[in-house]
Amino acid sequence: MKYQVLAGKLSKIEVTSKRTEMTNHLVELFKATPPDHIRDVIGLIRGSPYPDYEDFQYGMAEKMVIKSIANATGLTTNQIVEKMKEKGDLGKAAEEELAIKKQTTLFTKLLDVKYMSETLDKIGRTSGKGSVDTKIKLLAGLLTNASPLEARYIIRTILGQMRLGMADMTIMDALAIAYTDNATNRPIIERAFNISSDLGLIAERLVKEGIESVKDFKVTIRHPIRMMMAQRSGEKEEIFAKLKGTFIAEFKYDGERLQIHKDGETVLIFSRRLEEISEQYPDVCEMVRAQIRANNAIIEGEVVAYNVETGELRPFQELMHRRRKYGIKKTMKAIPVNLFLFDLLYLDNKDFTNKNYPLRRKALEKIVNETEQLRLAVQKEITSEDELEEFFESAVEKGCEGIMAKSIQEESIYQAGARGWLWIKFKRDYKSEVADTIDAVVIGAYVGYGARTGFYGSLLMACYDPIENQFKSVCRMGSGFTDEHLETLQKLLDQYRVSKKPPRVIIKNSTVPDIWIKPTIVLEVQAAELTLSPVHTCALDMIRKGSGLAMRFPRFTGRIRDDKTAEQATSQQEIIDLFKGQLKKIE
Ligand code: AMP
Image: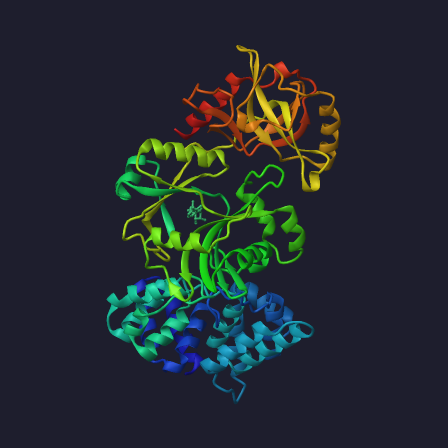
């Protein structure tokens, strides 16, 4: 099949915004495509010979592309840049220049689709020394043989600027019509796409073996499955109604979702966008290799940064530092992670996506050796609103942003690529940064490990209650310290170490520190927000029975408030007011 047929259709699709028209053009194109070329054609329409999850890139910056056009047309790079400015698009610039040149050229070879795919593949795969020149030559070779219109799309493909405004759904509609004469077969194709993410492969199967074969499409290890998503609700009644009265609630961890494929000793990790990101998480790969007992499996979980000193989970933003290709070993140490597993989609060559959630979770539990870093998502069966409320609070207290309520009914399959009511997220409804910093008093310290051996790892902080003349705990703070802070604070706090709990300090047993500090030193603390807390004693029972208030993700700002006495620290009442202010902001 000739690439010019494809380019002709692309030029028609480009100028319409009507989905039905786009579909019709594609149907005509697919009908004219020989079976052996369909995979290439799908690739060329989508801009890459490979499915999105393959980390395939052409590796040609605009400058290199300009050089290729110069080679093919005999123009200077400056002339091409001028033309690009005039046209606003390098594809169109190349098209016009080639049109002028072709008037004087006698012979060109017609590009065919297979040759195009192979050459694009070569351009992407060429790397190392001399690769810049090779890539420029390969592209120039294509352009020399291209018609002006073809050149437009070749350039846009290489630069990742197809801009057809066409969704995968339209391609699937067209495949259904072209090859089954029936648009209602699209969901079958869609399901296959959702579990394999490879439209070229599905199209080829459809053309060669028919729709029945696509119906039988199986989950395949190393092919990412499009992720199931959740609806949201802030109404408890709605959650109970949608999930039929009884359901599983799980901690909703605030990190990055990973889909992990273990195939023997090979571990591949895919992001929510189905990009392969295994190299960002060598530690996760190792955990999975060591702790998952299965020959092959596809599992999902949330990876969360944590503080080694306190064991506390860290905000999602910390994971950003992991987004890099180089120096990952260092980052791995600086930003250690926990993995919380919550689903199993495939196990020892069996597809689990059509099984209900309780079965999937049970199978997952069987293959996981839990460790400190690798755990199953905490979950609980919920049958009443009180249970839900209590579970929600414990999730928030543990540094989670809320909970996920999941159906345990027979129909609770893994709905690949869909956002349905089988999963419902229930987040905290009061979300906002605490506008003000809080001046809190140090009442205790926990010994440090790892990089903080010999120093205090984290500090127990309190607010002051002038009515009772007591210091009540409000958070455990382990972030924001530089090495210098650690040293200074160590010296300062050592002067106020006492062997027993100071009488005016009120805390719960679960927060007893390694070292008691007489309430003297005031530090400035910034927190993401204030939350209800079952472990801290600030405002205990005053907003809700059994709960106090705590600062979430507390961080030392670097300011030691030596201008304040302990009794001048932020008071309990101020914290209550800040918390109520937060709630008002949402209303
Ligand atoms: P959202 O990103 O707000 O749409 O919430 C859905 C996301 O929550 C998922 O994509 C996961 O990344 C994350 N998540 C955290 N904990 C869980 C859990 N226990 N089950 C499912 N998803 C979870």
